[in-house]
Image (tube, rainbow, N blue to C red; front, side, top):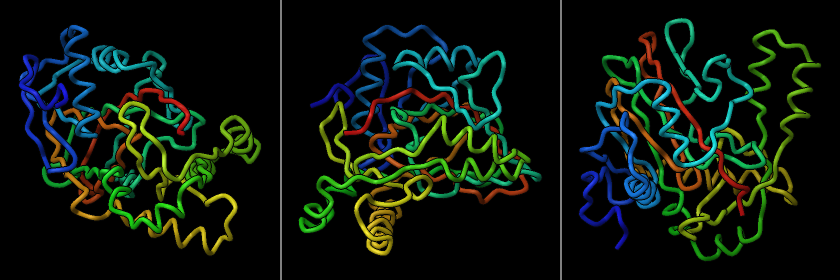
Length: 283
């Protein structure tokens, strides 16, 4: 039995679904938590793939400090950066800027060392809507046929930040600027099925946002397999759904799950802040 599944002195656990998601209560993230509590929180992340905290009225500095307890933080190269807090990614959608994260994905898989996890805090939320769904990609892999598992064994896929470069163009960037970003952040090759570095569990590691093709396959065959794997994230049995409140926090493991930010609230405002923990190269 894991730490998070035992009675914890630091917090209580309420599961959101049988396979993924849990809300942790009785903990104040504004405090300097002891290493033992941080270890329990991390174990809960491993057990449940995404964990949630309510009523966390923390500052940007406290948000960053909490993230750093789990590793170094990345600066998102395609986003506007706060000169004081460059590791803090602010995402605001409103009447002029409709949400675009409404597709299943794992964060920044176009990096050589994609994210370990993301910690997102809600500031302003719509009256109705704007939920986020999470899907357990370990369970999705487990339920594949043995024939398909054998077919996927050893395959790799190309991940690229094509969408971000297109947004650069839409915002007026020159082709020289776009090409400079392509050279700085070239496409990466990652396993189609990765092994989680902490749990040893195999998980599907392709996503609609950033995966381009499977290496060594024809375009037709590659797309057919990818479409089949993409569809697994949409299976309700692998999902949990989180309804945001102001000062709610979600901490998800990008190595184990995908997420989908529902864009059903336009033209209302949805404003969040995210810090992202640097991970390792998928294997």
